[in-house]
Image 1 (spheres, rainbow, N blue to C red):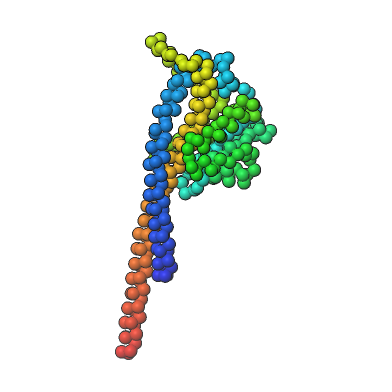
Image 2: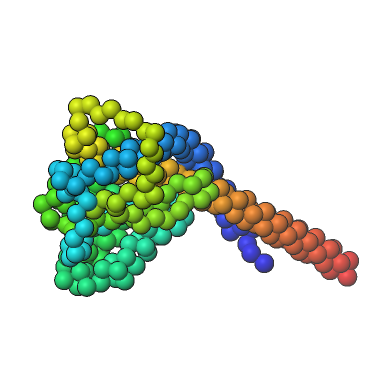
Length: 292
């Protein structure tokens, strides 16, 4: 039977933990609401941008934007790993890291062996993991989560486009969690560059577009803009997914703490009853001894 003092200490400790996890759950729920609104508002814009790009896809050839569609032999690879800066969000970061390792060692093992696979980390957890294991990390952009905005993502997207056009990398892929709902995140591997050719293009004979100033200039502006939006959407998706995962994890932790408290209080009451019974037995035994 456990000591009463030990049980009281454990009850106080678990109760303190429950208060912390409950508070973290409420904070994540508040942040999730804002992050969810942001990604939901961005998705229609991103989808419309892709639709316009599809309608103009027949003009990509012989255009400056064609460089972003150049499909080369993938010798030099960059993988963008999007994790979080903080933990306590279940398997959110572990799943991204596991998928990245699988991508490196299964799909790009030859390139990795030749030192041609580099990582760009967005999120401290991914950066710490791959740094400790001495993977090649070209940059750490964990600071973007401090003030997440399109303006803070643009420089990174522009640098990626420059690196691809200069043939520093032949292929750029992103590993991240796509936000589905508060309890569900979908692990995604998405190709950023080269831009995949538009799929399922529907050309309508009734469509009559007026291009101003001209189709070529629009493409020169549209393709880089689309890539910036794509990267921003990825980071927003991951940010919303992080808070959803943390809220779910803290909800489960709070429920577990509540269950443990019930068991500890039951154990405490049993120990207390046993102690009282022993005291009564000692008193009765002493009284019987005095009578004798």
